[in-house]
Amino acid sequence: MFRKKWSQDALKHVAFKAKYLMANSSKYTLALCLVISSGASFASNEDSLEQPNKSTSPLEKLKLVLSEVTTNQPIAGELQVSFKDIEEFDGEPRESVGSVGFFIQEDQKGLTISYDKQVTEAIKVETAARVVDEEVETPTIDAIREVGTTRINSILSPISSINTYLSPATLTRVESIENEQQALTKMYFSMPVESFIRDKQVRKYVDNFEGELVITTNEQGVPVEMTTTFEGSGRAYIFFKMKAAGGSINRYELVDGRLVMTFSERFNSFDSTFGKGENSSVFLFSPLKTKPNDSDYLAKTSNDTSM
Image (tube, one colour):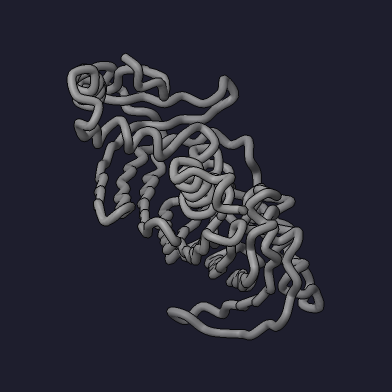
């Protein structure tokens, strides 16, 4: 009786929708695995932070730092983005890869995104090629779409995303470690499924889920490393099964008292009744003190790739 109500096209649509929300939501809802690690010295930037007393817990130190570091200090730099997606449905594999580099700057006037002439020309060529062949590869355009304004904001101002992970987390244990002659504290948290899967409809189909958050801080409470990992499986209706897992690596730095993300690598994989796949992306942000003076170097554009 059930099968009579669902055509093959309908089944594929449900499978695609679930796969999009659960697997590809690494870009949107699955929040994946973050590892924040920085070898940079924080001494000069930490002088302005309130020094907690020795009785303050590591978690309290972290929250104090996150509440005190500035988000108003102007920041600028080069952002390099690369990605790779591999998907296979009905035995037909499809692979997409791409990369792009551009300049970003945030100050009291707002956010500026600038692409050099080589990038804008590549966008035009790829856009024209897609008009002729909708299956043609467009690595530059696809790479730009990997990093929208929301993602750029999380790179330049990562405090809110860290707090988002901390809010529902439950501290399970704390340990002290030493790395490169630096005393560090590692905090372990258990994470609910809601922390990784934002969509309520998707969460209804999750049967098994495990998520963990690990944040490492230095003696001042500045986040040095944060990792989150997840693995889950579920069933939609009676015919669709799926497993998903993910991870990522982020590195942070204090630049003139402002916490920024300087490196991020994300990975996500899924295996379902109708197909499987994996996707990964790498973001590398190199902060600069000032914007380049060569006006010919930068061509101001928006994140719109329709030109």
